[in-house]
Length: 291
Image (cartoon, rainbow, N blue to C red; front, side, top):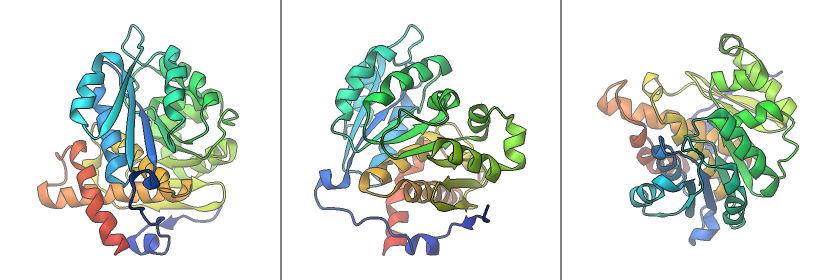
């Protein structure tokens, strides 16, 4: 396995994103399938991040009991309130409705804010065979990947955005084993799933079937905060919708997330900034790299 490429602004300038179009549909449509009665903010964080990354249109599918709250918080989105389980999670019975909304989406992000692994796996299992868009599978939606590592029901490009404990669960390893050799763990899941894998942490690792491993060493301890992963997953989804290939979307998304944290840390201190503040840093970062 080749050593990882450390990602810098110079790396990304040599790997430019597709030029943004002047019409919103030319920058892609993202559907965020996220949240629960207990975690409506996850859909908000991920959805805003997708918009800040430059996607042209946002749709959100979330639990009916919190849909109005989400819609008011993200007025740029179209929000679909759908059936939920007794615990407040999106119900697998909503899969047909979500799939109908996804027909007009370029990228579907599933998983931010899911709170029950069994409900998450059941919904993902019911939904994935109905989708043809590019996918980002995040957080507890990876419970599906633990049961279907070959991702046989996935037709389009796919990025898995995981933290070390989630990657360990998917691979049947403990978190400490992932931490001892994160590159090997990422490479194993890439080979078994055929997907791009973005592993979060103090150093982020991105692996892809036809690319070298990449690592992002930027960031800092402030990024280890509630909701931060939802923002990163939304950035990846937004970049995919804009036309980036899956490896590019994962690498750029990881770097933007890390550098947004660095900018906030310089202004407000190394810890204590909020995940909701990260996405607002992204347009300027994009401008700095692409100018």
